[in-house]
Image 1 (cartoon, rainbow, N blue to C red):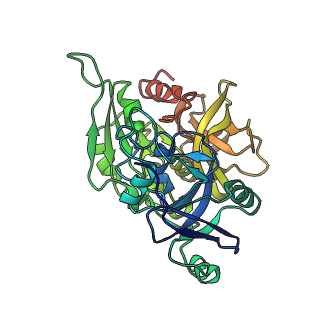
Image 2: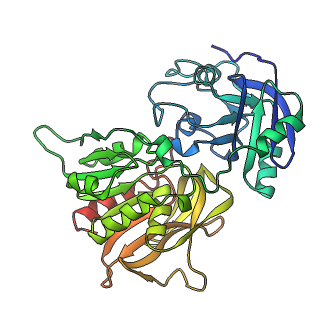
Image 3: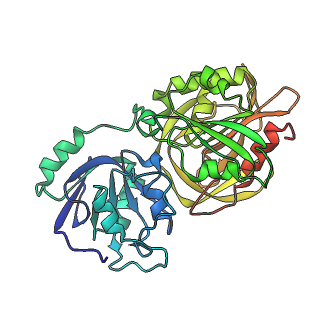
Length: 385
């Protein structure tokens, strides 16, 4: 089905910058934090990533929707973005797996969007001024009236959102093994906004993954009798998330091997005693260069984060910081802006105990440079790290 014209739409940022375009997706009004994504593909994975909860995503790639929407690529059971901004939506999708158009999917799921605006100008504005609240409306024609509602909407700083996107009931993703073989390992995975591909990457390595709600206790984690603990990606401000930090500290005290991704990296940092902070405009896309300081290799990686771990001032990255659970070091850094992209926790003798990365090594839409981190988790749990 081709995209249909739906009439005018209005976008207003909280600093008053205004864009006029055409309605795309559902009609109505929506609010959230305006962020931009630099990926040129993978829009279906972006839309269904729970980490985008309460965010209005601006696509920097000008043409969006060319491959339509299929039933195999979603990273969760629904679209999570609060709104969607594109320049030139595809008139007719063309792909052998396409089941329906992106416009149709947005309408079906009630996602309000806008098209036909200068997304390059909007992206440059957000790079210069930082991510900020935004409103999109197909019903309001007065920018001042929409601006008033934008400034009254919720901010991302201070928001605890993991509980809003997490599973309500525990479930198991079985290990993928050969005939007659049982699981190689068992992992307790705390769902803070987990993507479908993440437990699949572990299952491919013979791991039985017990996905648990974000509200789970340490006792519930230990009841799984896991070989390791995993914290997923997710939305919100890590400084506002306290229960999961306390859970992680308890697990580290039990010497349970830990691997965290994205939000799980930020919570790992806070569990170790570090601060987190809000980035000016964040990292979102599938083309971010990161150096693994353990191997010296540079990886092209997928990102979706607006917060980061703050390494203590005055302490070189090559120096470790003593914590109650071991010696913490920086394992990965972003080559664009030196943001901390990974942490390691080691014994005084140098043995790896736990680690985390700020990006998404499961990277369903690619790239796959960082898939080795799941192997590193296996090595950690089998004491081969």
